[in-house]
Image: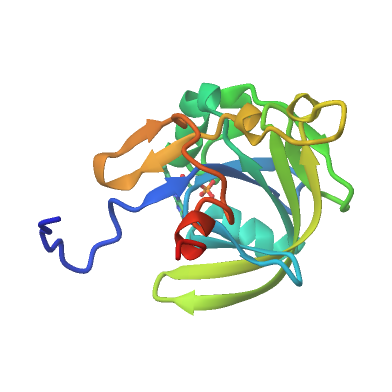
Length: 193
Ligand SMILES: Cc1cc2nc3c(=O)[nH]c(=O)nc-3n(C[C@H](O)[C@H](O)[C@H](O)COP(=O)(O)O)c2cc1C
């Protein structure tokens, strides 16, 4: 495969889309689109979110010590994008998008009802990266939509219909077809004589 060097840029990496829900000290809910998000540890269960230090979301997390990460389904692209275009410092994004929230198990945590997967987090620590703060959150509870589970309790994650962000093109895409089973497809190669 012939390659082209792009320099030290952050674009083109396929990313998940999430809404980070926080509350201000006054109790106002704020929703922010974030794609620099990922699970970074199983034990302890930890999620990392990279936030510009000027985000209203960052200030809310520092003040409250809690937040939720809400997976964005493809049908929510427009509302989620709006939450990435305006700051909660100026706009009531919950009112703007008409997204509904419910209380989580942690005091003061809001979960986006229209999201199929809500991850409740407690702030643990952060790593300073220039203008960004890589915020580490302990995963305290996960709320997953019931339709994703069959009678045996097996989950079909495709039901979540996650929206994918392709940074280099500034486009949102949904998932295509399943290609293989993870931790399994590679066994064919490993077991070849
Ligand atoms: C697709 C997309 C992904 C984004 N991902 C991030 C991110 O991971 N971290 C970040 O700090 N800002 C990110 N932003 C920008 C914030 O969502 C945006 O600045 C927002 O207005 C901040 O809201 P707040 O001030 O209410 O927290 C993203 C925006 C878009 C459209």
